[in-house]
Each structure stands twice: as C-alpha cells, then as structure tokens.
Length: 308
Image (cartoon, rainbow, N blue to C red; front, side, top):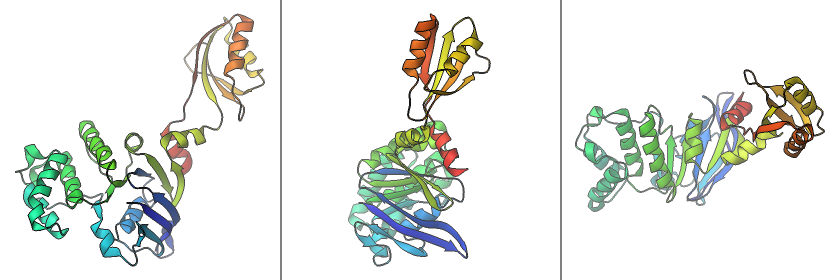
C-alpha cells in the first residue's frame, strides 16, 4: 500500500512542528525516519496513523485521504508508538486476543492470528507469562505483535529498537526486514547504523522539514563532494612528499595524519580524481606507494551536516 504525504504541516500555536513536507513511500518499501529530538518524526507518524490531525496538507493511502477515510485507513495500519503502551498485568495471549478484538479481527480467526504472531515475533518461550514479567526486548516483540495482529498493509514503528541490547536489536532488525517484503514500513530511530542496515530508503527530517531523501549510499555520495584519499608514501622525506603532492594539478589540500609517519590525507579539487596523479608521482620519484584508499563519508557525517 503506497503512502503519499503532500504539503503536510502541523502547528502548535505559532510553532511549526512539521513544516510543509511531502514524500512518497511505495508498497513493499522500508523507509527510515532520521532526525534530532523535536525534528517532527513522531508528529508525522501520528498524523499518518490518523492519531493526530494536521493543520494543513493531506496524506493518502492508496488514494484514501486521512480527511475523508480516517476509519478505513486506521484499519490498514499497524502502529507501534515510541512508548510501547502495554497492559503489564495481562498475559501475552490475553493481550493479543484483546488487541485482535479491538482491531476487528473475526472471532473465528483470532486463535490462528495469535499463533501466527507468537511464531513471527519469537514469543513461544514466553507466551504464558504476564507482560510485566518480560524483559524489554520481549515487550518490544509483544508491541510488534499487537501492531501486526490484524495483518495491516502498513506498519508505522516509532523507535522499535529503543532500549534493546545488541542481540535483541539484530533479531528485531531481521523481523522488520522480513516484514518489509510484504508490507509498507516506516520506522524512526536514533541509531543511524540500524536505519542503514534495515531500510531501503532514508528520510532525514530537521526542524520540521525534509533535509534529505535517498538511499544511504546516495546520501553519502551527495555529501562526499570532493574526493578524499588516505595515502602512505615511503619516500625518505615526508616534507618533500607532502610538497610534491600539493604541487599536483588535481590536488586542493594535503594534511599529514597525526601519529602516522608518511601518511597523508589528500583532498582533490571538485569533480576531479587524484589517484592516477599520485601513482605517477610515486613512479617518477621512485617512491613506494604503500597505501591509497578512498575515505567514504559516513551516514553520521551526513546526519551532522544536515541537522547542525
């Protein structure tokens, strides 16, 4: 089920928590929402789920507007809020039965849906416990199970891995990637590596506006701008090597790497590459070129650049 967000704005008094954003999520796509605290991620998710009304703009799911078909849209969405709201005194199976009933799952299908969620979310070992007896990781799994109990077309997951240990994060990541093959998924996270590993596409939101939209590779490439190389040259005279590198027509800047003899960071001029020029320089001067590797911009660098 595709999602189209068009000119979406949410105001609190004079402050715009979300400021005229537009984007589209295709069926079967896993999209990650990145942004600092207060950027508008959770507010946008709440508006997509019809939990909160926008000040202006529209959201459509398969052509259905949140303004004219909110009840139908709610039936097609599974939502896991950031503060996973669970009834701690209820056993897992009773809670899932309750969730299925309020989501309108036919009574005859509820037992099978509960069994499917127990299996899908890895709750078999703990299924007879009360929710309050579960670890943080298992509570997140129960939250995911309630979001999926009615087999929705769209999943909205707000910080689904918050508070989990590394093993639990890997398990939830695998589950989300599996679900993404069948459903449209939007998730938010502060863990950049998590979004990069899980999502097909990344939206970076800052101060209520979309700051970037693309795959992690695309965003890094766009931020890279100028080629950056790490070069190690065994020349016998590091200062002479640095001066020679600076003299290359394609090179804009050369820095020595602290604590590493004969290591340099070479920045090329815009739209130029210095790889061949560095190699030819070493051949000409009979220097040993021990290393020449490109420095790739990290997603963390892209995030800081766009949100600072």
